[in-house]
Amino acid sequence: MLAVSSALLVGSVGTAAANRELRAVEMPAKTAPITSWTPIQQLQLDGADPYGYYHAAGFLALADELGDRLSHLGRASIVAQCFRGGNERNSEVLSWAICRDDFVALDLAKAEAEIVAAGVSQEDRERAMAWITEEHERAREVVATFDEAARTDRGLKKVRADVEAAKKEWAAYVGAHRADVELYLTLKDAVRTGKRNDPAFAGCDAKTRPRFEKHVRSVAKKIPWETDSLEGYMYYLVDGSIDGYITTVSWAACAFSVHPAADPVLAQAASTNVNLIRAGWRTVAIGKLSADDYKPRFDDSSFYLRRDDLSAYITHAGLSKSDNPTWGEVKKVKKHDDELTIIFAMGQIEGGCLRWVTRRGEKECAERGDYENEVDPVDVPLAYAAGIKPGVSMKTGGPQFPMVVWKGKKILAIFGVTLK
Image (tube, rainbow, N blue to C red; front, top):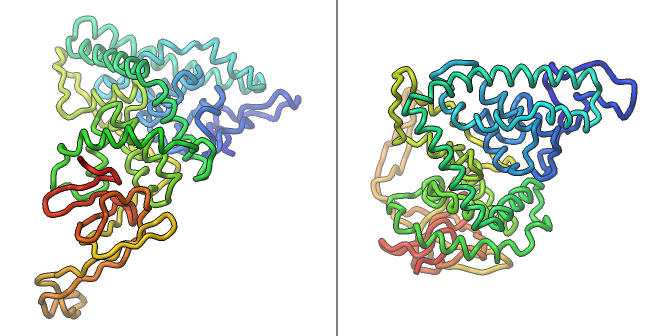
């Protein structure tokens, strides 16, 4: 378990066992589901880096996943993360626009009540509240500055209006897809356990695959032919929409339970820049406001958007994005257990190096010519091997997951989904 690390919250040992000091509050294990985080565990004073949510943008993504479970102490952490830079107008436009609502919603009395409910000593409660109050006052100055400026500046008005639009967009999506959002959160929590047999995975394929297949077929024609990387394909599948993100990550999280080959696929979908995530109104707003073509015209020329302020990569469950693909023309296939062994045809390499020499410490090609290139066989999960047969070509995303299958210039399958 991790303990709160801020020096502000380290006090003397309390005398009553039930009157715990705040430094003794056990923070969530990295494998613990987000839904289990208590109000006081959401007080991440130094950010949520241990859980893969980096910087202010990462904490906003965490807040979105906490959803209605976000506590006032969680909001206090958002306020501290967002406004830590002080009243620096040029770096605070996005923070003000997106974090203002959490500042307004933060009730200091309720935050203190959450600390008391956790059994924290009076000394440490006072220290914690002093820190929270200080950060709240710092944020108040920034919010007041921008609220006043927004009365007349059309650019600031547009930014805030677009945040409000993001809130409405997310609310409309949840209204129509609440079960899908809950499944997304459930499956991400199941992945955090590191157990591919976690009970939460039961029946997930039937719940996620049909929607994913429909989604893949709807975007397949938008994917350029020259796209050849896992990152490239995932970019088009996530596609900047709420449904694209929720659908793709939910399917990939389920695939994690089916076969380890899906690990880098899930990592590419879920461990990404916050501006590609759509897990709540905050991340939807970040996506809108950090887009390259988003250019509100501020009346005050000293205002501008520092998109880097809300740009951060998050990681999920420590999964690796390692690509290391295998590709070639399929010569023969053989089923065994839950895998399909693919034997590739020999490929012809033209003008390749036949003999290397070292001169003056540098490796140089001494002889070039044509030769056969042999690709090692690869075992892919049978559940995602649609379209793979002798005579077609295929490429994996990561070492083993079937990413794309094609013949000639025709794409036959993407991530195990046959194209009709």
